[in-house]
Length: 175
Image (tube, rainbow, N blue to C red; front, side):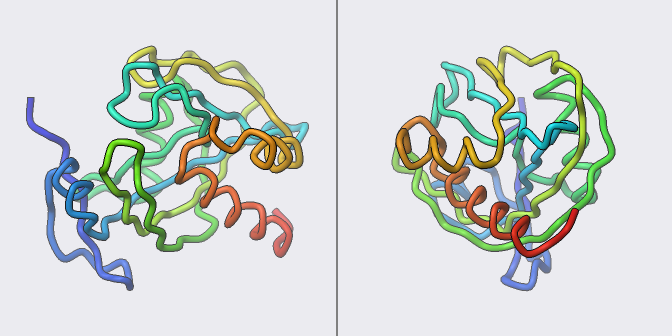
């Protein structure tokens, strides 16, 4: 199996090359990524718990799905693809904003991503992919914020960063 490649970018999100995903995380090279937040009509966020056998951050809670765009794929196409691969459903997505962050993993690797944050709406139950996802749940935005303060070690490093950006975006914008 060929290792997945990530799109290396500069700070203006202009592609500058491709690199194997693991190498990019070992070298902490800036690359393009995306994070999807699915909300229901009660304004709750669908969270996923990462599968127990993941090579980093196993069993930690995070946003509905996140991953990396493939060469030639738009941000929205990538988000829809990965949402279906991980959570088993399809919805329309809207890109809200992007930002750069750098976060260490629990295993010595580092994420250095220009992250495109997207939102979609869904009221059903996902059909989770056991290779990727251990469990899932709905939580209000305020409940997530409060739980992160009480139980920060139950969330992925990047979700804590991304959620803060998402929370402030919601404060400043009407969706």
